[in-house]
Image 1 (tube, rainbow, N blue to C red):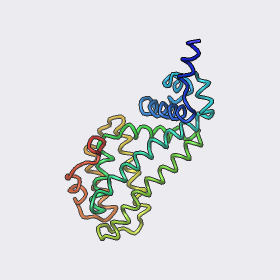
Image 2: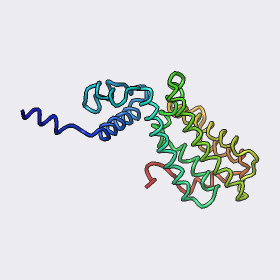
Image 3: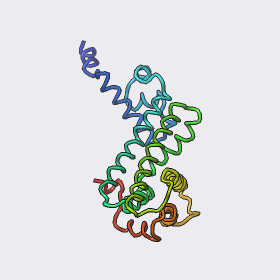
Image 4: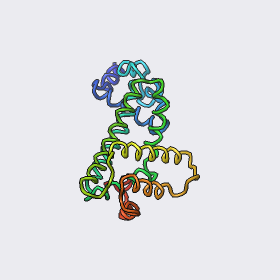
Length: 220
């Protein structure tokens, strides 16, 4: 009788259990990668039977996709909010480049890189990747357009510039995952390239970056 009472007391509401499963998937993704999100691993992390996880998440591709979206959208929103604290588009762009290249977010970079690969066979994940890439491009595009309006940038194709900036950031951070030193001081090279792309004064982005960083260690 006491055993039955104890089991009933341990039961959780559907919302609580779903949140618990989502958090377990997030922890697995950040610690072991998206490919490690399996019924068995999630169940072990939560401490329940695999069947219970399957009841709440019958489609593991969807769970992987949702986990990816939750992780990367949180970072996008965090960085976008922090950039609003900078006074000018030039300052915002300089700080954006530095925070994305300072090495404090490589765990999320790893999630991105794996998602691009897994998305070839997981259409739900591929759709989420496209959506989140669009969200990042929107952030950068708005920043470039604001710089044009303020007279700080000289370019006539903000969408393409935003796409190119993100492509360079993604490529350089992917290299950093394997600690490749073929290009020293990636941040400096990136800033100089972006200055030319947006039509900013030579050295202006590097000068802005000396003012501080937007990283997880000082975001608060």
